[in-house]
Length: 113
Length: 120
Image 1 (cartoon, rainbow over the protein chains, first blue to last red):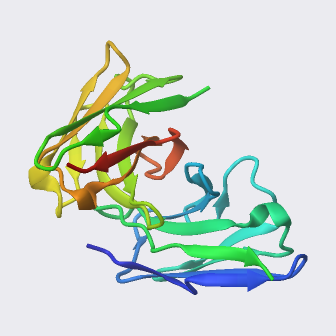
Image 2 (cartoon, each protein chain N blue to C red):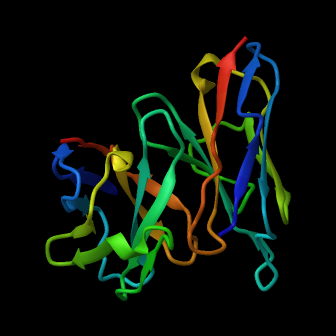
């Protein structure tokens, strides 16, 4: 299984400041034949299902604010919120879909400082 | 508009078999490239990928749970069914179904989830 490790486990950021969440895969999830990183990011608010933010590591899902960005390649990935808003408080998960089982990271809880 | 909804028992006893149904609309599982997956989340814990099924009846399972899981589809009813045998209290979780496209691989639409408690 590919192990996805997120850091930090929790993060407190002031409103308007930058938040950065990291995700590391235990093996390369860049598929050479199509040059895509098989990684997605999800946001989960309390009592709600996860919501897709990014796929192919950096392709923003429709409707996701542009203060969110996804980056990285190979084994190291980052989700960045450029200016934290109150509604961004949530748990964020990365997921690889390079191979089965399509494992998730342990989650990063983002709070307001 | 794609929607999915999970249904099934809220309480099962240890050793029993859990049967969950995902009823969806806005797409057909007979259409090429479409899939439905199941994911669970114990209270306060992380997401765990369980299984998925594609339009062509290709099925994938989590290796750690493969012996206990069966996923099937009924395209005429727009449903996907997940069964999990020999339930244990550690299987207490919210169970979600979600839509995916084969060529993309990520889950783009999720159901609201259903909480299943395993207790005697």
